[in-house]
Image (cartoon, rainbow, N blue to C red):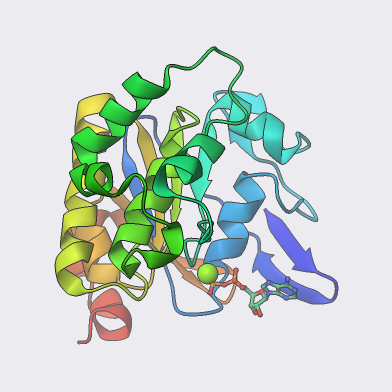
Length: 229
Ligand SMILES: Nc1ncnc2c1ncn2[C@@H]1O[C@H](COP(=O)(O)OP(=O)(O)O)[C@@H](O)[C@H]1O
Ligand SMILES: [Mg+2]
């Protein structure tokens, strides 16, 4: 796939596969094209060429709303929760594309199972949560659309290490218990690879290495460039 912003060639011929039921990580430095890749899968940007195939169907030309309805949901970089809405209202926003008569109570129970902290903060305004809590809320809001594929854009960005650990543990638990497929993009390569099945390394719009996550952690090139030697 190729993705451009006007004259800027952000993604230059990448091919990524995310196996159903797995956790896959795309690592890369700032500006490598990680967010662009996720936004293209979500239908927010259209590629210059190439396709997004999901469950054996070409979804490249579907609108972002339709793609959410098909079961792909994204937690955006920088969280982008609504500061002036409560935690509960933020969660309700995540369910807006659902066609089924969703049961708010069941959905909330599902979310509290993974992020119990949000339960105590339902009436609190989004803007008053800590960075880590906002990240939990952003992931939970994405879960409210009942996705089969969850896209997470830098869940560790700007968050205290202890909460980052908790968030990754819950992502793994979510995957194990529900079978939701997860594609994570991260600059925190070690943490992401440790919690994934497979990984890709993106450098200025191109894939340079891919492999089983455990192998990538041992890879000399990856160690030198992304794992601090
Ligand atoms: N809206 C935009 N308009 C023009 N260039 C953009 C836009 N968004 C991203 N880019 C450029 O595309 C490249 C990839 O950006 P991005 O996907 O955000 O990288 P990452 O998420 O890995 O930091 C960068 O060179 C960035 O400057
Ligand atoms: Mg980004």
